Amino acid sequence: YNEYKSYLSMAGQEEELFESIQCVEITSQVIMKITRHSQHELDKQLDPHVNGVLLGLINENKGVLEVTHCFPLMNNELEEDIETNREYQLEMERSLRLVNIDYQQVGFYQSTYLNTHCDRNFLENVFVYLEEMKEAIAVIYDPLKTKLGNLSIRAFKLSLPSFRLYREEKEFTSNMLKDNGLTFENLFKEIPVMIKNSALTNVLLCELDTVQDTAPFFTLPTSSYLEKSMQLLLMGLDEVNQDLQKINVHQRNVYKQQQQLLQYVQKKKNENAIREKEGLKPLPEEDVSKLFKPPPPVGRLEPLLSANRIAAHCEMIEEHVRNGIGKLYLADAFTS
Image (cartoon, rainbow, N blue to C red; front, top):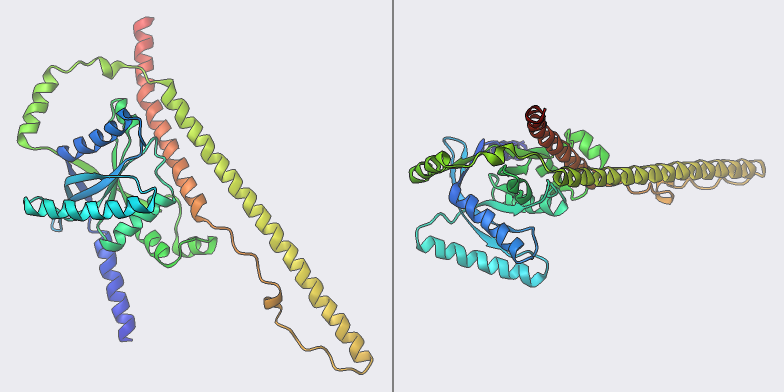
């Protein structure tokens, strides 16, 4: 009873920490560092998918996670890169502590194109950070959407059911998803992001606003952006179709095995009936489950991630078309 009570207490504390963060405050300095890191890699024609560490504080009274600093990392393609990044992180935290700058890790940032970040690697990275700190978040920056004039900064974390399930099993099955009420919609939890500026920055923005050219606001939406989004959407549908084929193959294998099992049982019954007529002892009963093991279930994690990406692409296309259709009507009114 005491162990069960202790387990409930720990589960309650974990849920409280998970739900404690209601908003993410990111300073404009951090935003500029992330965008500069991504643009620097693009200018050098290196890997466009950059990542780094977020530092800051947790305001428990307001339920706000404040991101006040960040620094970049190299991509972990080799084992040497992972070790180098680990040493670099320790050195950076030590240096920031010496100059009295926030050095507590509160998550990581990653650049992505058109919401293609939702994959197994991203889920694993988020899980690792949440294992260390239940309030950790992942900030996603889209340089392509930002280039079109809309700053794309979003914060995510694993939902509590998906975190607990992934901690127990690295591969999901249909029964696991059903028992935990987990779908592609609640696999990740998006947290509102608010950009915080200093007083001097706000004064500068007010001055820039008075001399800003309004021409970009009337720029018609580009077809290349929509075309790329549709291509990614079709790729996601192909992945779903391949998953359906795997499920059909699995169901056929299960049906074939059940038929073999029934044939084996019927054969044993016939043999025992013949032996009884001959006055012999019947054959000993065998554990059929050991002879006919069911085929392993089809993993549902990858399809879940694919469905999440498809939903994100649909939302992105809808937003892009909704913002552009007003400009098209306005342009048509000017030309007519």
